[in-house]
Amino acid sequence: MVAPIEIRPLLPSDWADIRRIYEEGIASGDATFERSAPPWQQWDASHLAFARFAAQAHGSVLGWAALTGVSDRCVYSGVAEVSVYVAAAARGRGVGRVLLLALIDESERSGIWTLQAGIFPENRASVALHLSCGFREVGRRARLGKLGDAWRDVLLLERRSAVTGI
Image (cartoon, rainbow, N blue to C red; front, side):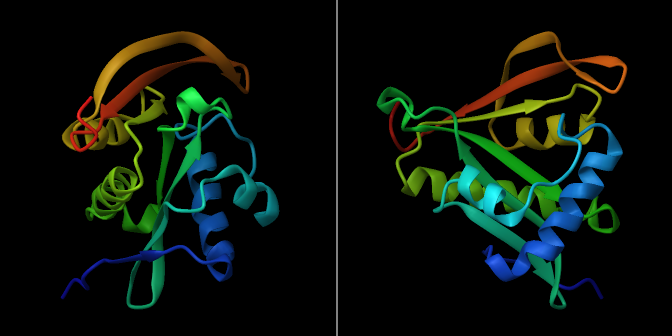
């Protein structure tokens, strides 16, 4: 029997699991340009306080999701970047979907009018997930950065809020 996935607020005490899952994503080579997970204090300071979730089943953290503001300028106060990471052993079970839907719901309750995601095109599962949750591709940033010796493109996807009416 598959345990139901519970979504709850991410807590500082989850950091060991969150960091492990983040590092699995980093190791895949298709999740981020980052080379290592930062210390908790740095991660905490860089993510919005109101939209942080952990997915768990049987008491084990299976994934996490959080939002990052894109700018300190007030005109961008309703724009946030999405991060969704799922443990390698939990992929393909719908964990990413429930996390992303929780972020969307929380973002709309909090007045966010645009969610954006930068995704490597090779990360087909993440692209498909975002598209299935109402994101659309708005562009491709060719050779945006280097990961190791390889230049990588990044797809820019966005989701506009239905609640804020824009």
